[in-house]
Amino acid sequence: MKVRSVSFLMIAVASFAVSQEPLRAQRSAIKLGMFGSDVRSILGTPQAYRQRSTARYTPSSSVGVLPPSTEYYDVYEIKTSINTYQLTLQYAWDGSESRLHPVPRVIQMDFELDKPARIDDVGKLLDDIPEVALMCGVECTVAGNGGRTSYLGKNLFNLHPRTMTSAEMGEAELIGSLFGKFPADGRVFRPRKPTAAVFTDRGLITAVQLGEDDCYGEGPVQTTWKPQGPAN
Image (cartoon, rainbow, N blue to C red; front, side, top):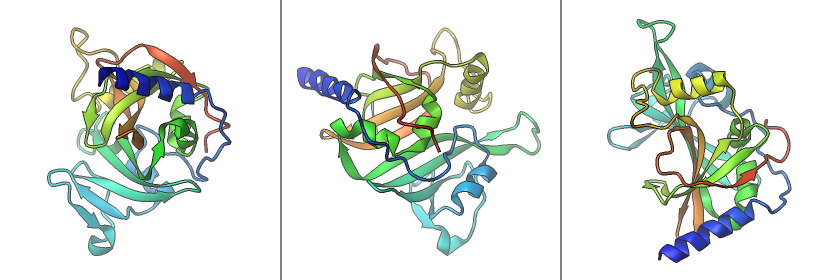
């Protein structure tokens, strides 16, 4: 079983070298740390809200427009030429400018695929999600993640920007700490950094998650990935 896991990762890494025709969705990208009001101006009213405590979905058509909040997630359905994604946005309160009037900012994005993708189509899939290109910039490193699992599936590998400025590193720590609520302890955590995690189930890609992660237990860099053209 262990040998199969390693072989599967090798196939995934090799697939990054395959040249892909750009198929990026024609829309503006959401960014980690973006204000909820800016998200709504780009994507509009969510199709549904997902309750944090029960994971139940409530259609926005039945409750009207609710503001971005930490009590529930915003859920959108995004269609492209190659797939349909359920995008779930998670927010946290940023009180750095005003403790009395904190504002919601994006801390995590989950893109769940309607049609699971083959691992050798990973490059095409990543190019179809403009948020990944925006995060990577010129290039991302790709590292194995030791098979960590979540409700999205098995985390096969992580992508991180190859280069980051000190300001970008500070922003990653701010967002990853939920705006100072859970500051990193250097004795326990590694520095947080922008992360695009690719999840699989039974050999197929099922989801891509973006967040600020300390990537504990992550393996060494296996390869790199460059977005095919500018991010939207």
